[in-house]
Image (cartoon, rainbow, N blue to C red; front, side, top):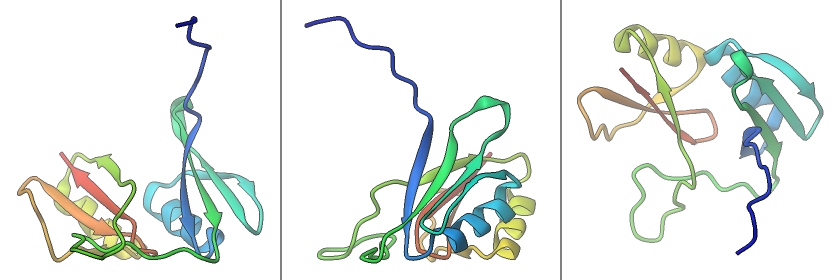
Length: 124
């Protein structure tokens, strides 16, 4: 096998029926700045040079189901967000527009759904 070329993860992309609306939610949630703003592609820049978060408009987007059952659209990715105060962060997420998932698999983690149904976890 040949030598691996240099690669850097530069971001994570979430599909959405409306990239701008989903980006606005994550901007409220995380407080990150918009660094690229198009009608079908929006990127939020993460602090400290960490990978950013991008949103792509996909007219065929199908909302995932959490937890998925047989035949349900499964999530393909979820975000883990470390917090200091779980209850304060949970209240902030709900104020930003997230919905607390009915199924909570761990006591020290809170699973939320963004406005398009992508799950994300708040954890200590």
